[in-house]
Image: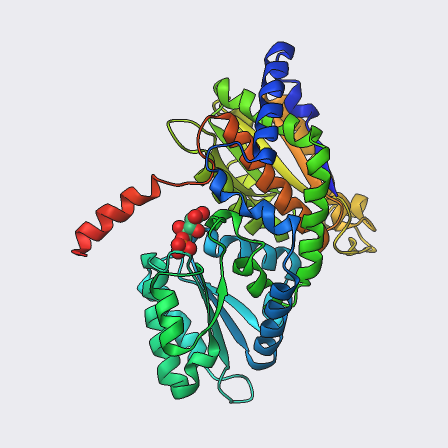
Length: 428
Ligand code: PA5
């Protein structure tokens, strides 16, 4: 269940402006639901929740269970929408993942040679008992042509061939478009097991397809609960639009009235990658034709000691979105000490969760008091069902809000420009 508190944002609007934005948001919401929006050929992220594919979930779970039995390390090779959702879900629901098997590592999202060398070194280091690590990899690319991913895949594929010989293809899993592209060719040629990203779902809306579900399932996350939560939120939002439309209206209002940035933060370290996923979901969807708010992910309270000053007293050109978890994730309390040498005796016996929550409440008070509109968006507890709901909530919100800006939420024509220049420089 989503908790939505906009009181510290709403107070920065004028009633008339807000009412007009709300009407526009209601129209955009109806447009998305009825498929009458720009980019309506990309609404498959709604279709898959309207009619979930049970057989596909079975297949993903079976494959993941085989990988879990076999692998010490599972590499997710992808960039942008082809890895950020998986990373967000795994970090949120798995927590301290290094203690669990298989370890999930991410590659293919940059081209640093040192990173890849160190990764390969790490793969080659034997386990504590002296035996070699067992490695599997999922390469994810809808187009199959994205250079960061393709290049990393080539280098790692060669390592798999050297390390595992004829059985290397059994350790490589491909997630790509239903047809076309080099990954489909390679899956056919080498016999890699293949999962499909439906044609009507773009990268940043694909976390609830095999793109996010296979890595999540390999990480031991119950993907049926993730989907169940998303389906419940989907059904709720088909009839109850209040929160989505109010949120979209307010963000639209601020965008129209001179705000430039949305600082998206959380006091829950497990949600850090989710703020990265949101940065991409919003940024790539809304940043077009000179419009949009620049999404800035922030990890709190860490970043209160770096950008907190700027938020409190810098230019008044930003809004802030804080993602919260309502129930404690841990029952760790502050220990009692006979002598109060560190002066923290007043906190003895208190839950770390409560202290962190007071930091959140204090931040809302300070930042809103300093003139920054603050949204507080939360989930009851950090579990698969609630996270699935939050993912769908933000997908729908993005589609509705970005449609209000009069741009296509689902394309990213600007990303091609750096690629063209890069390929020209490389002599492709
Ligand atoms: O949201 C998007 O469509 C992009 O971020 C893509 O996911 C990203 O560019 C990777 O593309 P591909 O999966 O084709 O390698």
